[in-house]
Length: 516
Image (cartoon, rainbow, N blue to C red; front, side):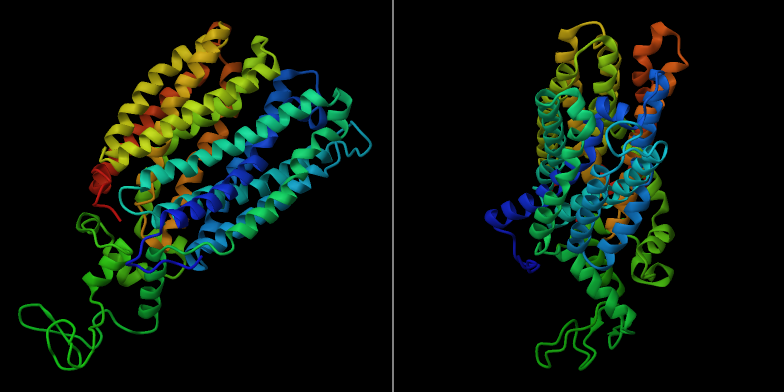
């Protein structure tokens, strides 16, 4: 599919293709990554054999966290590719990188079970491969999110962002269902010997499928236009080259001095600094509100650095920090409910099948929250104010949720899905505004880095931190450990929202018809 002209819009059929292709890649990568958590009962024994459950849990979640801590590094690597070589190439390379590391996990020797044993080397190799997975994931979903938000028309970005985020959930559901199928059809010995390898080895097929589908995806016009403008600046074509200003400040044709472009000599004046700012900041559409806060440094001076991370650090470091704060609560809430809670419920005596069922069911209201939130943004709901309200309400709900799930089966089946409804709504409110903190030539790098610092470090470390917090609390307070952590992060997130509102006031306005 060729890149659309700036005046053209993708047809519904083309949009269906783009969403399907971008979404399939996201589904496949998250299936690969999430398989680790769904096989935790088996992998505990395969790689971390010990009689101390607390040590075993810390070891398992420590390796789990290793894949998240490096995600910001992956964001810088793949974000650089996306901002220099194109969004398409970034998406293809990331899925192949993920597949390589996932297949390698599937052929690892074990600690002390099965035929191929390696002792302590087995968990070390597992941790290294999880790090490689984390690098790939650092460039995958966030790059796809930037891609979709740039390609979408005004009034549709919220719902398309929600669709792409839901693809993460689909990958998690598939990983959960495959783990359940293997655990229900294979004997315990078979699972320990070879059954756990099957989902990881499936990544070979998913990589070929995803890479093939993503090869011909169109590039967003905002990125292509910004790249052309930077190339013109780098080649020596000054901002006002061959143009002359009249006394009133109007631009004249460089050939005949006629105002603006000249129809007679067919010479169009080169872009001035304001015009270049319009095109770099607004991409394919001129939006007056989006220009008022655009960084002037993007078109002259030190910010013309060709390396995206250098440009980002020089012009938008505050935006990155506020982005991380903004996403802190939802990052932890999502991973605590989707990863940590499933394992924690088994400490209350719930069987494995039931905890997996609760997880799958809870992702349905999560999707509802995503779509309702995306639709509300497309209809004009101010993102930052509504995000603060949603985070506050969800944090209040977290205390009865995490207390009740261990005391009542009905509470587990009802409260976790209810909590996920709020999490889904907060997710889309956290994602879409932050794609607009950054200008096109550093957008993938900036958004990916901020997103993965939030989801990767804060979210990824949350299960490990909550497990450690529980060990330091009195027994009767254990159930509140995740809620207390979320309470702290709610304050951080609200401060991030307030900071973003002051730093870039346009982010606090409705998204319909004003933001590039």
